[in-house]
Structures are given as structure tokens and as C-alpha cells.
Image (cartoon, rainbow, N blue to C red):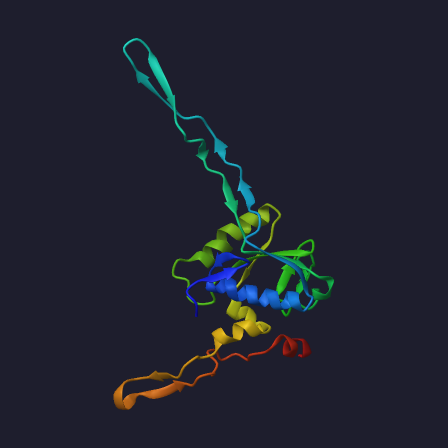
Amino acid sequence: MPKEYKVLGYKATFEEYLVWLYLEELQEAGYIKEIIFQPESFELFKGLPKKFYKDKQLKTKVKRTYSKRQYLINPVKYTSDYEVYWDVTAYDIFTQLITCTELDLNIPFLALGGESYLEVKASTFDPQGTTRLFTSRTQPWLSEQLYYVQLIKPLTLFKDTFIPKKALEYLVYKKDVYTGKGRNRKLKAKIGDKKHKFEYKTLKEYLEC
């Protein structure tokens, strides 16, 4: 795997890149109109502006010096990983309106006003707790501002739907893998074997299910 991944010319994480390959394939198939990586930020809090100063007693007067600091509490902004504009053909297949009373768990994306905002996280262990922080704080905070940003984990998305063609190379072994040493050394996986146990489906196979 390359050390650096890029989406539309911008540096991206491996997980963001995998989701890009997924969205790109849907766009090529006509289900998505436009994909924006790292769209315009949401302003969650305007900040609490104040003027800060210090007085210094000189021989004949008091000199007031103002600080460069501008806020008692700084403004808070949030930038999602993706903004997706859906084509009408995607509804009830890949996306559904979040305003619906009931939501179909077989449809992977939720839309509001024809678009979806996505936050991409790794499907594996998250030692820094960024996923929990997003779901417990940022996501509810965004919801209060009438925004919905959906959490997406690429491997879970691939398992539930399909694997984009360009992402397949990252989900199979590129060389033979062995376990153990010496006489106990055994072949674990061969070149081309799947890295994951779930069924690997193409977009065509998923649509035909």
C-alpha cells in the first residue's frame, strides 16, 4: 500500500481513501451527482469575544496594553469528511431520507435535502477513542444545529453492500503469509486470498441480490 493517499488532490487517510473509491464507483454508475471531500465547515459556536488587557504603572501614568487574544471561549467549527449529492436513482437503494418515520437498515446512507455528510472512521480498534467522541459529543451537537453527519466505517460498509473494484487490491493478500517458525511454519494465506471472512460482492452482484 502507498504511504500517502489522496482524494481530489488532498491528503487523506487510508479509510477516507477507501470510502472515496466506493463513492466514485457509485458516481460512475450514475447514483451520485457530486462528491466533495472536506466540504465547507459547520460553525457550531461563534465564540465569546472579549478584549484582554494589562495595565502597567509607569512613573507618571498607567499604560494599558491590549492582548492579541480575542475570545474568552474560542469559536468551534467542524468539517465533515464528505458531502455527497445523490441522484434520484439512488433513493431506496443506497440512500433514504432521514426525515422518514421508519428507516430501512438495508439502505446504507441517510440523506437530508438530497445530500449526505459523512464522517469516516476506521473499522478496527480505535485507541484514541475518536469514534466514541464523535458519536457521543460531535454528532449530537451537530444534530442540535439541524445537521446530520453519518458515521461511516469502510469495512463495515463493504461487508453490508459491495467492494469497489479499485479497493479490492487492498482486501486480498499480495504475497504468501506464514505463521510460526522453523518446523512449525505453516502457510496461512496465499496470494489473492481474501483478508476478511465476509462475502466479497461487486456493485453488480449487490444490485442483483
